[in-house]
Image 1 (cartoon, rainbow, N blue to C red):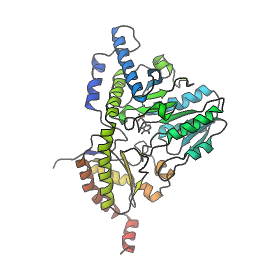
Image 2: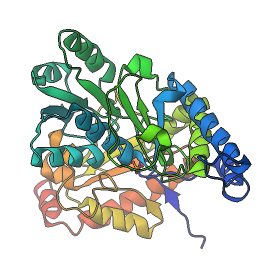
Image 3: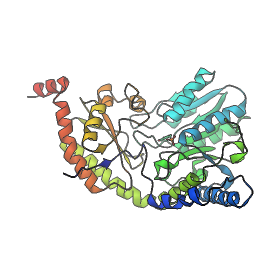
Image 4: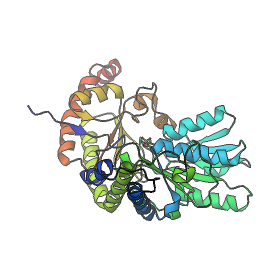
Length: 399
Ligand SMILES: *Cc1c(COP(=O)(O)O)cnc(C)c1O
């Protein structure tokens, strides 16, 4: 029997597009110079670096001087947060949300340890913060606001533009500007990002979430932003991110970003159809399931489902045996104990939070993938529930 493998964890990472690999290849073997060297090899690498920067800038409606290459999305978030605070040279208050990726959440927890004050905004049932709550949270000593664009566990899109509008009004009446950072790792390549419309000062992205290589990120920093580096070395990336630029990966970032942006509508249509098919199939065949997150304001590729009376980890392992890759919460959270901080913040009860699974689609998934999941999943859920005393009791009572 042929072994089937279905990858439904595209929010954790994606396959690198073959066109992207082709674009990167020469920069490993032919154009391998250091972009800081003045001879021919270096100049060629420098041209590739600046072409990539210009391409990305154009797609974001930014200028090339506002694009900084980093080692990953996590690093972009860290440079944004600690870089702004380094430039302030004094302690103060930060506003974030309870549902941030660990790259931001753990940065904020660290800031609390070193004397900063942090407000973690609540979310509603749909996983979205309220602009009213945000306005109430602003203090005289607020220095920075960091709110993700879309959440990586449930896909909920946060009201970034609305917050930016409020922040602009607040900033007009202050001497010190409150800076606004957004972690856009889950929306880059999935929504058309326009930094002028979003009105943010800093925006983080990572190539491996949109069919680019792992280990390369971008930080957009608006012109005039007062930011200092958090690591020190050479003059690369205007000293904000010292270290020899990874030209093949940077070229790969630009190519993957270009392709995914050109195909946003096509991919979203394809992915949304698959997600709807899976959602409907699950609701039709499996009792006691809850769909987590809002439909209205969400990216199209994430379906987060709670299977009551089951441990999400157990379901993940059983699906893995059948060749299906999914995740519980985020990949970064697996291995850590306790229910997802995102589902807890959304008020999902602990039974449902324990049984949550994230299916995340990519452009390479097919109808056949969903058919296979719908063939396997009900049986697996059934067999796991048959081992649950709580479930057996429930069946017994309902007889
Ligand atoms: C994946 C992810 C990150 C981390 O990006 P890396 O490139 O893996 O460091 C940060 N934020 C969000 C929302 C993510 O989904």
